[in-house]
Figure (cartoon, rainbow, N blue to C red):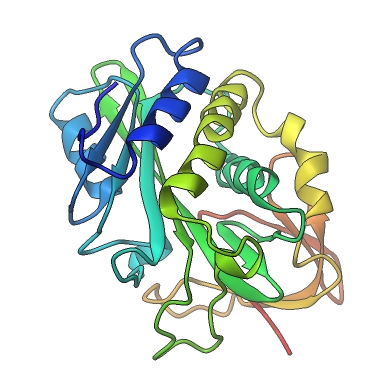
Length: 266
């Protein structure tokens, strides 16, 4: 295990390492005072041939990233940002972001819901997000699971809906305390996904599904070529492969996370 001796994360890093090292003997936890993005750093290392399992925590991210290149806005001390990187070889990658979100929500609070495919929600507001990337390292695939959680309310400028904060549920919780809660369960969930895919997580996800029964609009991601493929209908749960099921006027459509974004409609 590696962590800065003076870091406030030292105790949490030890807790996560103890929880994960039995399944991953070469696992380490590393804490950086500052980095552009924990995902970017682990992807750089993977492309340089480094494939050891690691959980990388940033006390401050200068250029955090969300899904589809969106900026993750945070001020030092107001959020928990970290990435888990490890070799993984599931038969099907579909649903990994859902399994990750479920592990985080289960470890934090019963009121947290999941907005397909990458967000944690509290009372209809975004509490956190997941960003998954992969790289080839030799003949193996290396996955990087990035997590960002709001601890205090971040700036809401330019956002359609004000975000949520974990301190609304757990007053006074710090970033190290949040990491100690979620780190071990996250490692176990990713390894279980690698062995069994999304199936073991489907029931748990459905219990926290924030979209089920809501009218949604599914459209190509921002910046994608304009098409006529937008779909409107009622979110009707999750398929066995983790796809979103949308009941339209004519059929149930399966939507995969790789091709669309989802916007709940008022």
